[in-house]
Length: 105
Picture 1: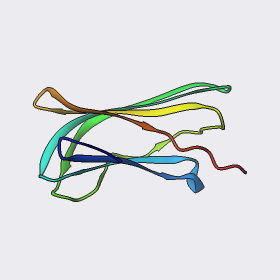
Picture 2: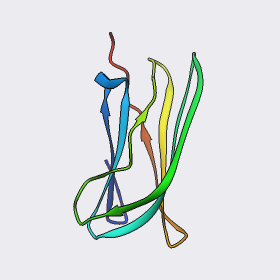
Picture 3: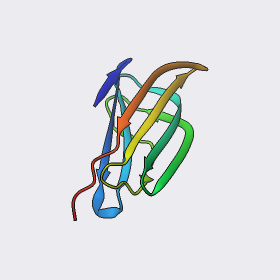
Picture 4: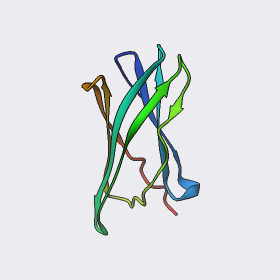
């Protein structure tokens, strides 16, 4: 979990549903922010990139999901999620979240 500007950010995963990853935000104060999210993976099977952006309304101390990302990650892949938060046109925080290691089958 990363904490910056009174905002907590973390990634939850559900590998039982095809490596589904969901970024969450939680704020100490209610606010509306713009966000830009980019998930990137590079490995033996090639490259993949998913982008998403929008606005999010954060309630006081209530976890808020940004939406789920499905990305197949194999052992040895380089995978991460970049998340940028913007308030009033100004970048207020930037995070890099590592994708989970795949579970051996």
